[in-house]
Image (tube, rainbow, N blue to C red; front, side, top):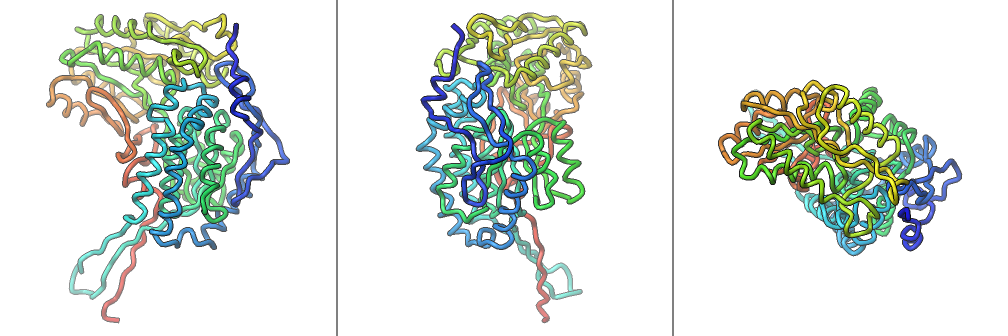
Length: 499
C-alpha cells in the first residue's frame, strides 16, 4: 500500500500559510500555491504567493523599523535580553519543528531531530550569535605621524534591512544562520523560505513573533521565484543573504549590482574527497562518502563530497565498501525510524538527476550500481536508488556539474600532485576532505586544495567556525565572527584633538 503523510499532516493541524509583516500575521487576498511532499507528492497545505506586492509591504515595514524605530539604536544589554528567550522557546518546541521540517522536505525524522540541520542545532546557532551582541566592537588606532593630532576609531553598525532567502534542504538551520546574526547586529529582516519548505520556518516565525521585537524588525513572506527576485532587487534592501544554486546566485548578484547591496552567497559545490592509500581506514572513508550521498538528504547538500578521488591501489577496496554501505539504505515513510534517506525534492529535480545518470553512462563512466526509481509503495514519490560511478574522468559532465542528488563519482589517481590538480580543476570551491594517516600530507594537501573548507579524515561544520566558498561556490562566510562582520558596516570616525 502506498505510503501517505495525510494522517500526520492532519495530526499536526497544518493550516493555510499566512505572511508575517510589521508585527502582524496577515491573511493573503492574492494568489496561493500548494506545498507538495516529495515522498508522496501529496498536498500538505497552501501558501500565500507574496509576489511583488507582499514583498513591498514587508520591505516597507522593515525599512521603517530600521530607519525610524529603536532596534538599531538599542543598547546591547536590552537587545540581548529581548532576544535570548528565543533560544529556549526553540528548544521547547524542537520536536514539533523537527516534525514540520520532515513534513517539508522528507528528511527522515531521526535526522531532522538529531543532526546539524535539527532545531536543537538551530537553537545553538541562535545562542552563539546572541552571545556576540555585547561584544560587537571597533578599534582605536595609534597616532600615525606628527602631521596631525587626530585620533581615529572604528565602529560596527548594522548593515540595514536584510533579505534572507532560504534553501529547501536545511530550512531550520539556514533560518538560524541568517536570522540570528542579523538580529544580533541590529538589522531588520525579511525572510523568504523556499517554496518547497515553508512549514518549519513559519513555526519558527511564530516563536519569534512571541517576542517583544518592535514591529517590522522581523518579517516573513512566502512565494516562488517572483518573490525572491523582488526581494533581491528591491531598492529598500541593503543586504541579501542567500543559500542555493549558483544560477540563482548569479541572478541575485546582477539584481543587486545597481544599488551595491551587500551579499552573502553560499552556492553550489562539487567537493572532492581525496583518499590516499595510507588512510587509517579506506572502509571508513568509502562508507562515509557513499553515506553522505545515499542517506540523510540523499546528496542534496551543497557541501557533500560528490567526487571521490581515490588512489588506484585501494580502488577495489573503496568500491567494495561503498557497495556495502548502500545495502543499509532504506526508503519509506520519513517518520519511520527505519527510513535512512530523503526523497528528491521535486519531480523536476528527480528527472534532472536521472538525466545526469544517463549522461554519465553515455560519456563512458562505469555505473557500478543504482539509478533505478523504486515502484510499489514508493511509486508516488521522488525516489532514486543511490548511484556509484567508477572510472570517471574529471572532464565528464558528472564530475563537472552539481547534480544535487544521490550520485558519487569515483576518479582514480596515482600521485599526490595529480590528486590535488583533479580536486582543483573545478568551477566550485566550497568544501572537501582528505583521508590520510600522514599528518604532513594532510596539512600539505589541505592547504593546496582551493576551497573554503577542508576536513581531514572527515568533514563537519559548527556555528562558531566560518564556512563558505570560493569561485562559483559563493561569496562571504557564515559562522563565527566573520558573520558579524558580514551583517555590519565599518564606520571610521576621526577626532581632531587640537580642536
